[in-house]
Amino acid sequence: MKKRITGRFTVILFVIGFMSATQYNTVNTDNTRDSRDTWEIRQQLSREKQLHSELLSEISLLDDTLGKYSDKATKEPEAILKETVEDLRIGAGLTQITGPGIELEISPSLEAIALGTEITEIPPDLLIRLVNEINRFDGIELAIAGERVINTTAIRDINGYTTVNTEPISTPPFTIGITAESMEEARKLSSYLTASAIHDDFYIDDLTIAISEPQEDLALPAFDEEISMEYLEAGEGE
Image 1 (cartoon, rainbow, N blue to C red):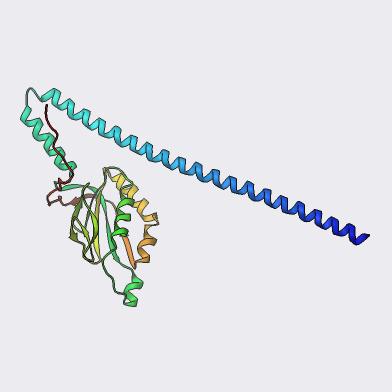
Image 2: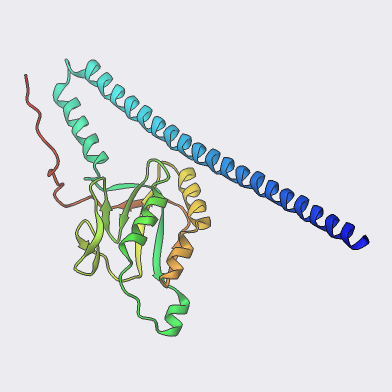
């Protein structure tokens, strides 16, 4: 009799324990899903706010340009036109610029040198990841191994060589120059890149990133190639 009661009691405890574990599992899964969805929404909201901020900046710049035309067009039409053309050239990266910034030196890691590991060109996808990290900051201009990066710049593999603007990038070491809108922004960029996980990605490829102290006057070369007009179409005037 005692054995039968003990057996039933054991079965009941097993059922209760199984149901409790199932309920705990379900609650945990739901919490994880909700947390993940909330995080994704926050990321999307952050991207939308950044885009909104960029659009407001563009609108403000266009308003300033229109204001210049309204004030000076009747008195100095040629001067305002030349000023606008120069602003467009600067914005397109067609002029040399000097400003506060930092330099990154891409070099083989000490372990790779000690072990005699052959260092080849930096992989294009790794270089693109670094550029994307840098472009998280607004008002950034950069040049990779002397090649100015603009909106139409392509970083890709051509015949086994990593290229920027179709120009092969030398095997590391080489430098990347970055200018910011102010010394404060240059310091923020330096701190961000110092703590970035991009260092781990480079280390896997036997490379390191050395970040210089922020400089007051860092010069970047002009983009000196022909800008591709392949996807531009002229509109018909009325």
